[in-house]
Image 1 (cartoon, rainbow, N blue to C red):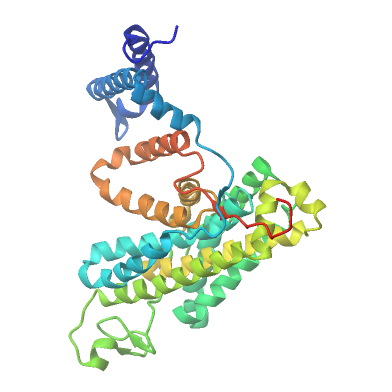
Image 2 (image 1 turned 30 degrees about the vertical axis):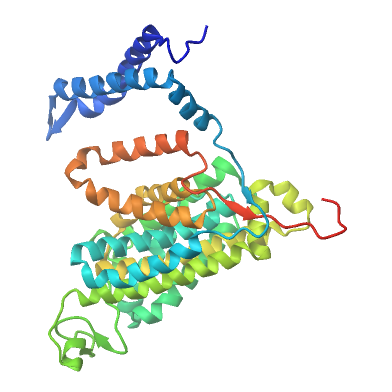
Length: 426
């Protein structure tokens, strides 16, 4: 008999807590209890005991809470998370239209009140917004699981450094060229995998990302190998942001007759990056409402039905890969210019996993969700630097909780319904 809110089954809760403690011991024991020290290791049973104890107490309290009336209501919300695309009534207007102007004002005023550290964190967040938006087209809209997206990111970053070193091209010249290079790479990747789906597609794209990283590492004469390459800083109509001009230009502070500020470079990168992100957001918003965007979603839901409706699945897939890759190429240019230096270690598989986590956490196909998730997963590691040993563990726990609580992501996709015309049956 199921216990009511007035009679709690304490025995069941105790059994649940013991089982949770055993699972925590198996999972956390090797990770937390064994501390490597060079070629030796140290056993920390106290940390394991604390963690297992916290898990057991938390599971006991949670089990007791879920047996109450309020807990059963919360449990019902988890059971009815909903799936697919939500539909708003015809004529619905989102409240985001009131929030966007405020966010724009805050974003414009931010560099005037932030220090250098906060400014660099925000720049990194905007770069991951670009990466998340690009992968969201491939995975969220077109339904093509890409685990090697970081390869396009590397193409954009190294495109800037190599274009500067071998061709003398600067930031502004390489920004569109890197986008075209990454799009071309996306087309080359798209052709061989047109017939692949699911796990096979993920394995091939994962191999593509690793091939790019290994080429950058082993082609020492061309890419500098593990030593990396230097990247140029952006200029403003020939004015450089260094204390002394390096590329034959004029430093900005000498031209305007003002004091030198080392943060001006990052403020300029932030301003340009903010404009580019706003442009990409607008273009992506328009694409999702154009026939190509509807074709991506049709491909995601059912490729056979998509082809049966007369859609060219080859062009649909290639367009998703190319547009998503071009966005990653632009992000790579900003990353290289922001760091001033790139090497292959910046483009490991973990970066692809992080970008994919941004898309999954934010919501597959959701633009607003991806923007929020990009900032959360960028700022959170900076706030958790004191817990460097547990950052990956906390990251995994966050993803598990999200898959249970919000399997469709932070922001679910919604469409506005169409009112039936007069004289037409609904």
